[in-house]
Image (tube, rainbow, N blue to C red; front, side):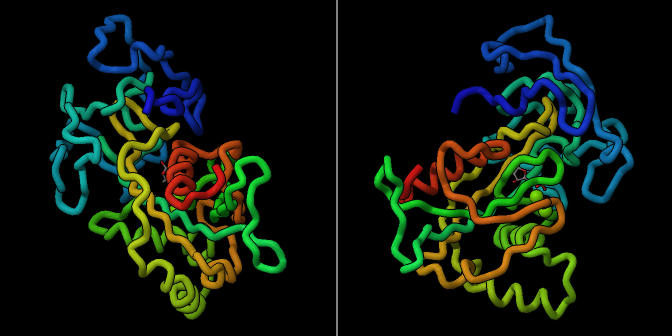
Length: 279
Ligand code: RP5
Ligand code: MG
Ligand code: MG
């Protein structure tokens, strides 16, 4: 992978904060750059100390590069450095210090469930792409409320939570609206998707995410897992309903031309390659 790009977007998401412009050749910390003068920013939603956020450094010194109580502060990228008590983004400069919209100093762990099926015609024959001649995969995609971009219905791993549970929980919340339905309905949802999610799935990616919310001191990491409905009669039959931080949900053709949030297109490319599908 080249240098992170979305983590250097001009305007910090949900704010009017302009990132200090970091050219490609100054992204790596090993490049000496005395003129670097990033903006410090932590969003008010993080500063008001919600349960999912760390306190400010100073009053608080987390145990970096280790599992700190229930909070996993280890990185999939290996050991990260700290400077003046603050962790340094393993992929380099972003033009913003502090945590921005992210709750944790250092890695913020997420999980991304990539639920796929084959695109079929009325006779249930697989549809191949006219140019690549390969069968087309479809995945469950949500439109994020925060930025309006299409994305995988992923979310943060709760402290101490198993990633397998995060995958199923986030899919239920964002693509099946489980947070807004009665408990009896939630039981039905988990019964119906349980079959698909009880398989370990194919681990597509584990590591840093080029997320627009990343800063020099806080960044997203994820485990992306592909759960595939080969026969097209398990999850394909379910009715999707957007919930929580999703504004819309639908099956979307897996295709390189479809723009997606953060590094999600990179994950879908890996799924397409693995399944010999069109990309
Ligand atoms: C991305 O942000 C991850 O890949 C995951 O999809 C998502 C998690 O954040 P929220 O959806 O909880 O905002 O970096
Ligand atoms: Mg969520
Ligand atoms: Mg989410």
